[in-house]
Image 1 (cartoon, rainbow, N blue to C red):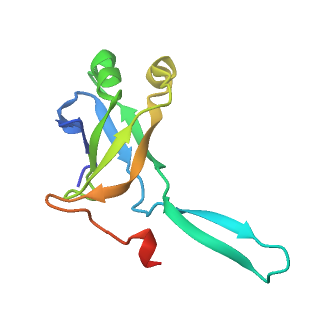
Image 2: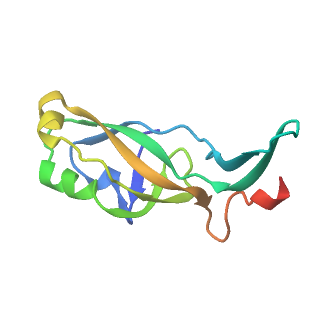
Length: 135
């Protein structure tokens, strides 16, 4: 099966010359905590305050008759992203880091970093809803 992503409603398989060579692993975001030390008390008080946004990286490559302007336009902005290793889910993400497309054309490989919000979503609900209060 060929890897692909759907970014802002557009399928990467529709871009000539683009290969999604590696998808990000399926992971969970880290939990944000606030640790309080109280003088004279053994141990710490740990409050769970939410989940952290995190980065998901995709390795891409070029081949054949590619159009770098279309590819650079594709990998910009913010929106929903679906990875082919989780085809029934999507993340809310943004591409924040600059992509050196001159280097990409020269070496034909690049890493694209999607800064994702902590939850992934299905068609009707959040995939996992473990609340911080339940910990």
